[in-house]
Length: 508
Image (cartoon, rainbow, N blue to C red; front, side):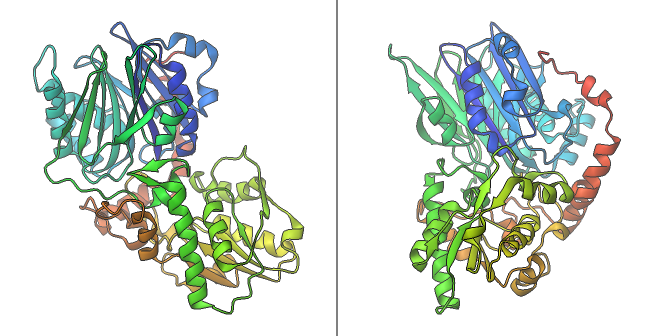
């Protein structure tokens, strides 16, 4: 899960990219990077840390140019070293910098082919560098001193033919413009917008979520279609082309549950409105299963579940109360590396208000239950505050399978719902009753906003991988490589030499 942005403007874009990355920070708090282009030269700054930590005033002053791209990272494939912060850069052909959101599921095979057939060296373990080199190679194969948009689209078409997975990509080509494209299944989100200056000139932005357009004063034009590419020249000419014959819109359903901001619109669906409908569906399920329920109060687990919880309480005709105060300076625990750190961070992140729990039957509502760490801690906090009973509702179905398209859930054994039924999960997290959203209800909650969506990537719920070619051997290899213990061992072995030997130019 990452956030990407690309801008072509009539003035310096560094501040606008910075602002866009700041509102996309929820998609990654591990690292940030920016590349700008001025007079056929790239200027790059990237490092580990939050956006406002990576980009200081001295860096911003040197990030000149009227076009550029930016990235915020949460590491999935690859390591968390600063050497693997994005964007990545190659000098041939033309000079290309690229950033992407998602995962390539055949990155290892493609990297091997790049070395043996294309004679290109991959310096990191990041699949983003693999993607960059595939695109660079295919563009170089066009053999043009000055590429036309059609040449760029041909290269993108060939990229789609070589790589598999879920990906949204933004790239800047020195002296030519900004390119963005989306995977053939539309798993990862990508939108573009424009703003009109007082003199009638137009500026353009592509980004992971529409909220990035809002902060820059850009108007949302539309989503980039699955398999589609958009190329915006330095002069502001816009070219689009469908680069896949058999594309289909199957966005990641988890985007609407948790990943995206509620004020974003993804594939013409308001995330906020979708979450409201999720709450209505939860209330209806409560009334089906326990029409004589004894719920006194519905309490959300801040922040992503608040919208669903409010609608649930309204339709159940029970009180809605804020029972937890959130420390906003603690990151998203779901994406923290390691179970111990996630567990430790929950109590730093949330503090309960005793009067909202004491002697009450409490329905806690969360967006989802993944590893169960947060849920266990929160249920215990509710009991410590004197709750008579603690029920727990999830706006999403049980997460039973790993995600391979850009969300770091590599190991099924780390998921609390793996090989457990609802009663066993309730016992594991310590609540009196566990209520999960039905998958069909979740789909309906989103489809109501855009009936044109053909299907969803629901792999975390039902194990169906829409991009194909995922078997148990692949999942086993992924688990060995990316489970918590493997990542801890990798972090322990990492030396600073990898960071200091970063061959990509950075402004320090």
